[in-house]
Amino acid sequence: MKRFPLLLLLFSLLGLSCEKSWKERMRDDSPYESFDVLWETIDRKYAYLELKDLRWDTVYWHFLPQIDQDMSEEALFAVLDSMLYLLRDGHVNLRSPFDLSRNWQWYLAYPDNFDAELVERHYLGADHRIAGGMRYTFLSDSIGYLRYSSFGATIEEAQLRAVLRYFKNARGLIVDIRSNGGGSLSNAYRLARAFVQSTQPRLRRLYRTGPEADAFGRSTEVTLTPPEDPRDRFSKPVILLQNRRSYSAANTFAGLMSQQDSVQLWGDTTGGGGGLPVDYELPNGWYFRFSATRELMPNGRDLELGVPPDRPLQQDSASSRQGRDRLIEEALKQLR
Amino acid sequence: MLLSLACSSSSAGRRFTAVLLLAGLLHIWPRASAKAQYAGWEGRYLNFSLSGTRLFTHDLSLSPLVYEGFLGGLQLGYQDQLGPWQGGIKITGAGGQLRPLAYHEQNQTLTLAGRAYFHLRYNVGPWGPVGVWAGLGQASYWDYHQVAAYANNAVNYTGLFSVGPSLGAQWDFTLPLDKAQPYWGLSTDLFGGVGAQVLRPGYVSPFVAGQIATNEWRWHGQQQHWRARLSLCWLRNNGNQLRLSYVGNFFLIAQPNLVKNASHRLAIEALLRL
Image (cartoon, rainbow over all chains, first blue to last red; front, side, top):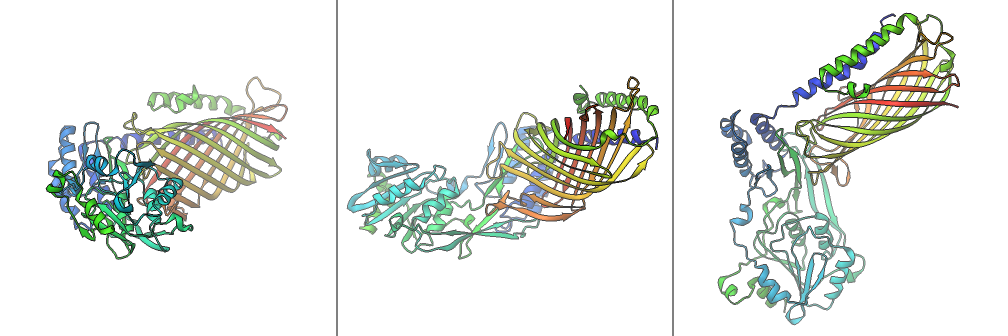
């Protein structure tokens, strides 16, 4: 009984002693530890190892000999950069104080098919309208043109309503998302709703639920409902212009638009970027991000692979010399 | 000063704290009487408290690094001791910033923490001069982190709503100058969660379809939850109490991403007798 105060004392000091050992164990920021955490996080959480047929175990044993306890930060970054490059994913980056690793071959390896200067000077003109991130005007023969360069620019319902009502007498509409690198999915859903004619599940998002490569135990459906007021929908023919730099949320938007009968996709296959990227840290304090979910269209196509066009079309040098955008010109011919 | 020493990461600071506490306890121990508990514990009380918490969290859905920081907090509560029964509820809100332990300058993380603790205990008899109570406890914890450097997974949270046994003990004593009656006491309790409703981010995403990704019941083993409190109480003649309390918390949730959370909270509490 006389030990009661001592027991209390020991009990209250227990927490303090635990703290020290915890701290000491968590301070391993060696190159090996950073390499292991990066490799293991990709192994256990990255969404596309199976889809891309990557043998990640082999990757580990290939790069491990290149890690050295005394290597410089630059050298470590180069090794980790090379490892992540194999994922062929624009949503994968490693961020250090001195560089950002990336694989941008999803668009650098393909023609751009888009010249923003040319489009502004020869098609949008000086007096086009701007609502949020949308720039729009009428081209010839009552054909509308809507340019949206980033899904990071918010679209408000009132802005979208104004745009659609402006185009209420248009014979058709060209929606141009070339070189739109993505942004917010909610903007993509909001804009896509304007072209949807019926309520249906349009996408299925799969969430990885465990470390096994095929553990996608949870999924949710993305269902788009058309606006109740018919004036807030556009049901006439639409041509969506896309290129390899149409990425991430723009890629998802193209996937949604491809399911509409009134919409045709022209240009190049979109760049992909179907997964939701999430961030993480390495023990050495660097950040990285990676795709953590998969998105599938109703036909089973994974959006990471990009959305192919209904009509493949490239900008040609003759059109460029004449100051013309071949994709817009062809779309105008089609919609007349 | 005691707070800073107790929370000091240096072993010298902790040793000094230990010696101070030990000396104090050895000084007052011979004066403990074997008589029944002082009646001044009895009554209904409103509880107000200011606290400082040092929080450590190692959350693999957030980072491989341990995050630490200080939270300032306010507590409101009610407690009573009526005959053989002890009961009460305390609700604490705290806020502050956590940073990685290893790279303190980066990834500043806003943290909001909510705590509620309910207990109902019955006196199971004196143990010498110490009164002992046993009963049930319920501890509700909610930690919310907003991670500055992250985008789609910037929101990180842990909700833990545990139930389990609660043990309490209290002991009153007289200081050398307080000859007339005991004016001081030590009060302690220990809670261990047997089962808990757990709210956590999913394996890769904070939310699924806008909902909290993991929301399920877990038994001890799939999670652990411990709470311990030690209070030095000054029992005033008017029935009120002033307390200096230390509360240690630890919880662990294994799936879907391991999270370990430990905190030391030091509080000044005022108990107003109703």
